[in-house]
Image 1 (cartoon, rainbow, N blue to C red):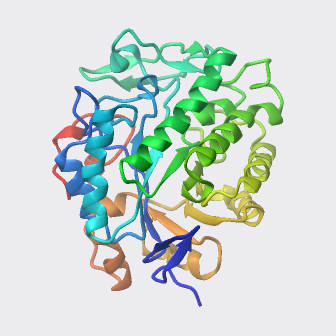
Image 2 (spheres, one colour; image 1 turned 30 degrees about the vertical axis):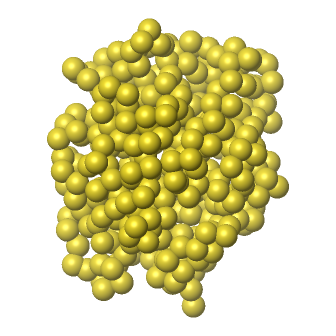
Length: 355
């Protein structure tokens, strides 16, 4: 019987176990230059016993930033700073992928600075507010990307993927979940386009497919992953055709041969769709399952019964840097402090020490 503690070959990269550290926003980068700090290296190195670390969301371009003090992968300074992080992880025997996260309309001019304005598939403002540094601000309507800018954005993902490899990452995960740009193209309430990038299911999945293809062409499909969150309403996303969109998307990307598909379940009711996507995808299947509270030891059986190949743990990894060992020993566990992980805004994030 396969367990979460068995090694796995991830498209040619050997992982020591099947326990992944899920991507979690930290907002600890330097405000000037959006570069990761020595604290970032310490934080990830402490968790290097994960079979795979998936980094916090990293903006592929300057306009892709969604929150204060998040790091990028679009400058030489950022590449050099990330190299310190990846070296620290590799020195402890770990593997780490960079999550490329373009926030799209989930941003604000006060966050972006330099005269930049949030962009999206359509000029539709999300409901609500976000933390922009000094305080909370209302979302603004994004500027609709032109057809040429859509292509430029896709190339921005590919360029950031090349930068990630130069910075020493073992690969990248494309963030197609949680209401950010890729997800915005998939959704009918944020994508009102009538060109090749909107309207039908085939057109709305096109951006995600082309981003995956461009990244795989840039660094190799074996270094490419994709994260999805079917039926997730976070960041004012409304999906009217979840059951059609996600099987179509997975069928379209499967021939590209990427290393893994990472599904995060917002609610338990999507498990049937999760199982369908698992069967439809030929590569490694990573699951962040729907649970009551932080994912815990009770989820380990999802490896044993074949629901997933790898389990992604989030909050429990913050409180327990040596989580694989604690899961193997059945505890004890430190209790995650909600103040130290993403809970809807980013107040205070830069003040917490590495755990």
